[in-house]
Image 1 (cartoon, rainbow, N blue to C red):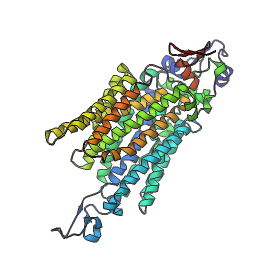
Image 2: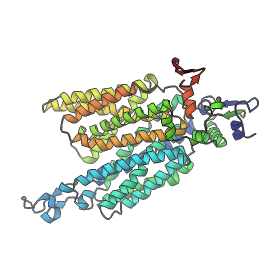
Image 3: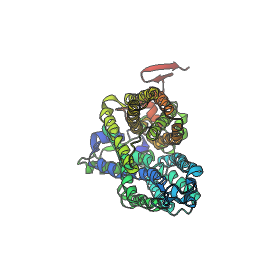
Image 4: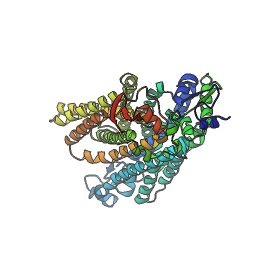
Length: 520
């Protein structure tokens, strides 16, 4: 009898065998985080660098370069008239889209428009590829598709003949790039055992921040041509698809919920072999709902609609979406409103990206001690309180420096939350709908990114008040989420509901150890 036949036959069909969930198989036999997982994690998470480049390239490609009047003595005309009035771009008209297409003065809104549209298309793409990742494409297949599309659209962007073609290609890039981190994170962390999953998962954000720093270095070398910048930042995606992804395995959890049990076991055997361990022949895999055959569901057919049908996951999704939205508004808004080092653009971007890393390190160190929920509450409230304090500080000189210091602490707290939410959201939903649910939260995050610049326009102090209020509200909402530390990564909807204690037993609906109500 094959492993697949044994699984479908139900419990007890393998004589003398032992049937384990993937978490148990990793913990007891294959290894929770060994050489195989380390290699797999580094290769897959490198994709975060690609998304950082595709997203943040607009900081440099759409910048407004310096403009000068070669006639001197102020003899040039209206600056908004550009070359017609005698003004010249110091680095040439090809140094940015603003310089080439004259996106200044009355046309400057077009820069913000293309940025907002990019995030809007990324929001849509996150939902689409989140579903495809959970369904027939799988985690690896979805990552291959989005990275390939990013490379093609990025290269085509370099050939844009005018602004509106540029906008169209940025829409297509955003649609695919917006889900790179999503697909990468799920694929990278699902083969990791429960004891290490949270801590290792927190390390993914280092790659995104590192990608921004690398991008700044590349952009500094290609300041005179925004088109060449797009070519150089798009090629790594093509290299990633052709030289790295072929050596990456699909998630064993995705194989299992798709009833491809032999493939799932083969991945676990590879993990065990590379880690210097072995899985006994009598071990077979099971889903976390298989001991309840009467209530068994076909995990391979789950979709985002199943998240809304379930009382357990419906509330989690609504809360996760709201919290991600609030976090994104504050995170992106503070970055635009407070962090202004008054130095070279390229150096500023590097410093800003590296400044987030201490927050990532702190959350990683505290994650296994405090848990996901208390840490998320604390980091959001920290940001909210300091932003509120900044809104109450008036004056110039030293007081303005104090206000900026409060804003920096606000960024520190929200960067920590942003990093933590990726891990937290992963653990709140089962394998069958995990990427789709994370896609929804990522969509909410993109909406926050669209709204953030609008909040910044409210003035000098009001944005701090708004960010403070949103941070505090977000921290309070986290109180309504369950703790996930040291809990299994569930495979199916029923498995999660059963594990959380929300199912019918002898006429009573229970939640944890508490009876909710009786039904006759």
